Amino acid sequence: MINIKLKLSASLLCILKDVNNIKPEISTLKVKKGTTIRELLLMERINPLLAPMVSIGNQKVDLRTTLDKDETVTVFGPLAGG
Figure 1 (cartoon, one colour):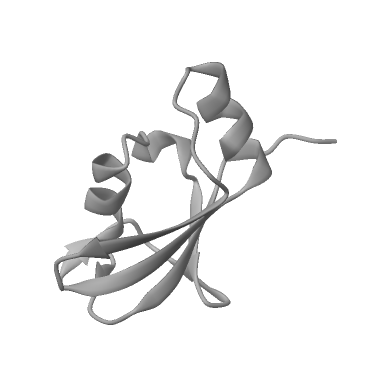
Figure 2: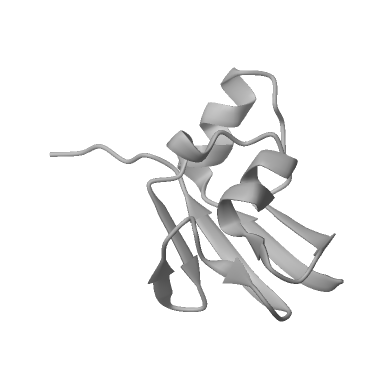
């Protein structure tokens, strides 16, 4: 098992609150080595479609990225502006 520090952006937290899936901004999770980010999101009841950008450290990663060591994963929700 590995420890994942999961950080959720403010935009994602607002969307989750609107659908009664209230989450903390930062949580620490234990997952099996080799778990994908997509699987991590599903375990946390977060629809992967709500996560257009995910990063590990300062590097943008794909939802198919596997987690093989203790990491900090930051999930950004949809953004709009103009």
